[in-house]
Length: 358
Image 1 (cartoon, rainbow, N blue to C red):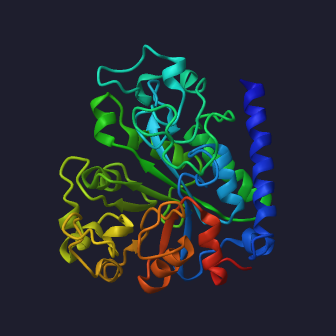
Image 2: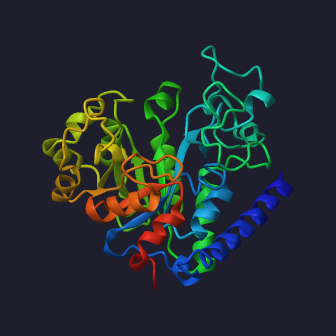
């Protein structure tokens, strides 16, 4: 295990070095990439790291996002059977690891493998790969991305992720923040664990315990976020995520996007994270999406809420733009969002040249 961890540490260093080199060749310069500031509150959030280039939620992907100039780097947090917070986008591990190959008899009756059914030592035996379609081990979601099963990547813990970011902050002089998400709190509670208590303990251990901390804590569950703020005493900045349909008890996202709903969100959160189509939908999806407030950004700002929509991908563009740069510029400058989640942080850095210079 020690040798494996050492290999990962070396790989992260090499990847970050490569990222800094790449930054100096794509037209916005090494000094630009190194600076990563948040002037005018326009920020770049590395979605699952830089998962447009490397498998999501790996230390290598985080290193690349860091080197490419992200202001914040996102992580999704689940708990293992022994209560350790690890980084995984879903509460299941079917589509991004080789769990079915390593532990073929450990799936539940629904056919899925769950993070919470494995100890940390077992999770660490898995290899992370590019995301595949549900039910397939070979059909990838984004065919043009990192080759499937061509390298070994580990599932990181929340602490390993934080240690990486804080270590790079020290060695580079930057101040990149973290952006963890509490995944499905009710599921964890139903399975005997309280994810908020565990994650807040880790955040406080590493100094993320004030409103000024370079940390946003996000979740889709409004009832749980209120509990995190009022019962658990979280002082870090909180983001209320918004989806197209409720995936947690009591969440009415359509109502949440109204002026009245946003006023309530502002009593416990510092911002919202809507799907980008809930801000701007020019592909004709109206009627299918709960896009009920055409002034969502303006109304959120009225209640002192920042707006960080997701997810901006150059390999999954809406019909009304021809490039991800065009899409990002539209949201940053015309829609006036405060930050964006993107799989390709280098592109966001490029369209915010004045925000990412020393």
